[in-house]
Image 1 (tube, rainbow, N blue to C red):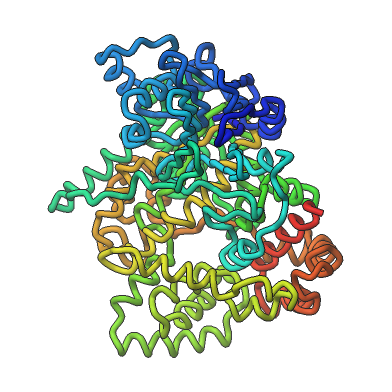
Image 2 (image 1 turned 90 degrees about the horizontal axis):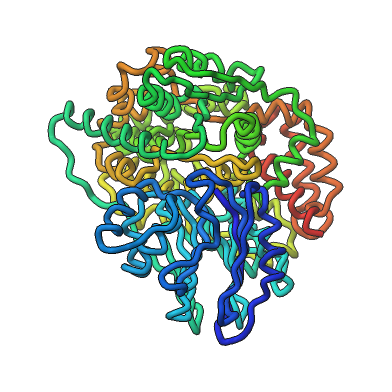
Length: 626
């Protein structure tokens, strides 16, 4: 993994290499091993680079120039099929000076131009300057595992791996985007291409942008393809096993040691089992787990079962006690508001893993590809429900809601939530499962002077339109595609990339192999969701490789005990940050509404843990900007 930044002038002129260096210095944590820089002969393009050396550490320095000195690339990521591509290009006459994947990109671009992106199996964000065409190509991988930000500035385009690099450019405004902040308050993240800064954009996943004399439009180069499935269930199991196994083994390509972040859930357990089997008698697989003292959130025991079963060298981390300073440090890793609280334990386990390895595999993507979330099961049940069952569930939900504890994790509260969503269209049901604040709640929370600048209905309309626009066989499959379009790239992968690269650790997600995702989407929902569990086909496909308890355990998710923390350890930080900072006193939120949310949560009358965390993050971010 690496970090880069640069600028490209739309007309003849001279880019500022000193500015490019300064921008790249802001993302030096992404590549602590070495640095490089480039200024084109015509002066129009300047790039600076910081490298984490994983493949061909001694040879593949960046930015790298090739193709008769006309093409230069800055590349963050890894191309898993680079050896196959290298052999193909060599057979066509290409001569290689290095042993890594970066030079393959240069030759591939020379042969195919932007169409090269279809040939890549990997995770990447790249900038290619083509002096022969006076053009810059910016591109991002299929699912958005690697980030790429850019800012059109009239006479130039500024680009880089993180927003902090771009906002250090003297021509980039720091002005907030009010509309983007309403999206954040609605879903807990800001979907691409929007960003929290009015001047900045995020290149969407599976997209590229060609900049020459003008700023072009981002173009999509890939979408999940329909694949033909074997008709027999046993053959479908074999296809799932083979595809996931191939995805894991392909991601072991490295010239440095590779470990696994083992959560104890099904996906990372499968990754661990396949990796351990691939290692064979050589052994030496290292696994890392983070857990909590609160048993309802702790997966260390399950992770240890998997580690012992697979014979890995296992390490555990207890994410407690926590402190306001630790929380603030984790929040400050992100350049824009980001409300996924699992970023904290993910960061801590990445930090621990980095003491031993430079690369680690993770289970990200398995839930989206193979229907693992309970919300998919909820939609599947709602879609198949007859009128009698509907009214029974509605009645049971009303009773459960009147007696259930306010903790969101308990079964009666979940039943009440499911029953309460049933009367609405499926797009609205999914929004209810995924949202923090709807437009009505926002209207009571936002200060009047902020509301006049925002369209409170916009995020809901975007969310529900995106859901309805997808073509799928059923509602669970529609929700999978929705998550692949926004929740995965704009939340989960932002989290993974940001916290891991803050530690100089490269994370790879085998479940996001595009062939595995396409297979998972193609499998019938009835084969993925059975009874009270999702990912049934993965359980069956890898049943012989994992302990029974792990295979049969209910879906838990990588959450943290937010409710308790905010009532106990963080209550002082909560009051001080929300009620005394810029959020409540700067014309953004109503102080009385904030005080009401805090009082309800601290008294136990409601569980506003996720909402208050999102507001705490936003308050911290706003205070940092002033």
